[in-house]
Length: 390
Length: 148
Image (tube, rainbow over all chains, first blue to last red; front, side, top):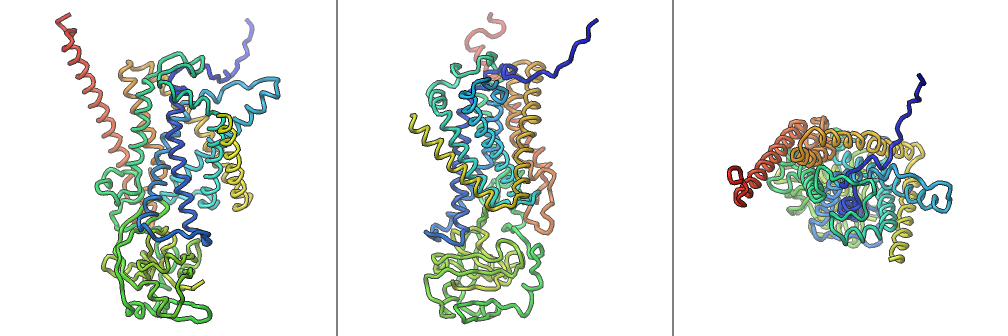
């Protein structure tokens, strides 16, 4: 009896006989995935630019809801992209086992480049969506800087996506021009009907994207009735307006509640120190403005305090200048932020002392915080210690 | 179309290169290595574990159940798997916000379970309604039981 050598079977694209794993499905899902990536990319760039200390063309404070809407779109598009990416990768999975052209360098090089670009696109997209979803839930299981990796990777992914689109454009056009059940672009081995029709697969994908967005939305408390459905939202809003960092987490409780607290306003060499009581004695204004976070949540609050412009007029600061706001917190990227001139001079930008008719709580920035329209939450500095005219 | 393709590829390569420059410019080598490891782990998790598992499940369902049931299960699977993967960052992390009571302030496992039950029931009701609709159609067309 001869001993047979046992070999691990080598996966081949012929193993996948379903017609569902087709260019017709991959292209249609890919169009929506591309739209989601595009929306997330553009809104991400807007957020990044809005937080930049140097803006060649400063963004304005109008409309007050601008940042809230763009960042909700950012997170919704990113969340919807998760099921779309899963189905897209499922539909093209057999391509992973396509044979390489052999012994012909001229054929091998373009295939190698195309596959490398796809590898970068897939790995980048998985990482970008993965850390994005984790950031919304404030789960930082890494040592790298989330904001910078997420931003840099966004350019990599969108670049790899354009390269992929450029390579596949003729196929994309021909597939989209035909019917979804067209089989001309199918792999030769894809001969069996799947468990679903292609139309049913696409409908299920759209439904999955919608369900995932609704269940995970961070806009749960912003849109009436969504709270009960958003069972996977990291923010239920049961405790009111969300907080990103508490006073204890950034170790400002002692400094913020000290009787020696003073808010410094610096104009050139002139320094004016104001106690909270002195800020409260200045003319007060009240505005209802949204506070919006890059993580997608936003909430309206009725803020009362001194107009920042009135405070700067009080100390003789000229108009048309940006200011640097410093927080009592001793570390963290939000300790120093720059508020650009259009926001500084807007009548709705406040050094807020009260929220919804109550003294600011410590976690919302007591003794004083900035609130300005159409601004990222990271620029709404809590626990103000210093305002310096630049 | 050739021009469009060339422009797309060149523009894409440029953006990709810019992103790569940003990544290496802003992070230390150790941080970059960690991010690359995460990307690789994500890729392996998908290509070597998740995708074969889904393929095997699909194969099993197609052989174990009649076509109509398999169709409903496949569609249901897409929705439930998406819901679960979309919620991976909160499932099991209820209360992990610590001092921040506005973060991770739900019972996510119960929420996921409740949503899954509602979705399964909705699929069941939908399948029943479709079946009744088909039966009525057959009666209307005169091919129902007893008229053959």
